[in-house]
View 1 (spheres, rainbow, N blue to C red):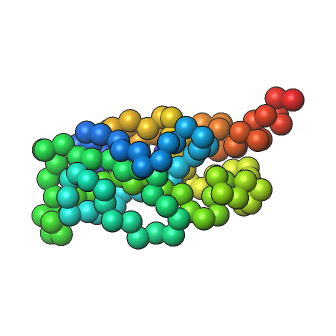
View 2: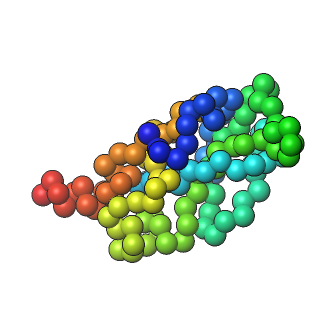
Amino acid sequence: MSSLLHESELRHESDVVWLEDPTPLDYVRQALDKTPRRRGKPRYHRDGRMIGYTELDQHAEADPDSGLHRRRVFFLLPHDRDTQPHGVYQIGAPGEAIDPRTIEPGRVGEKTPRSQQGTTAIAAASS
């Protein structure tokens, strides 16, 4: 599991919505963003691109101070492995990186050899 999120923070997730097919991606970054709504595409204020997000069930309550909901967003930055395969993350991955194949509503997601080392590194090690 990711060391950055806990499943208790995700208990009201009902769906994962993918804006892009995550199948070819070794990893996606995940973060909890504050949004005004439980459902629908949240605003995105980072470099790079949003790959997907979660939607919350009807029981999810907004933060009493801000009135905002905490929802998970999956994204990639311009220097990530998918766009720069020989860059800084050719081998290795950022701390918030998880394998998109392990993402489910209410579950943090996992770090796998593919997400942490990359398919190129795994193929070279098995040769």
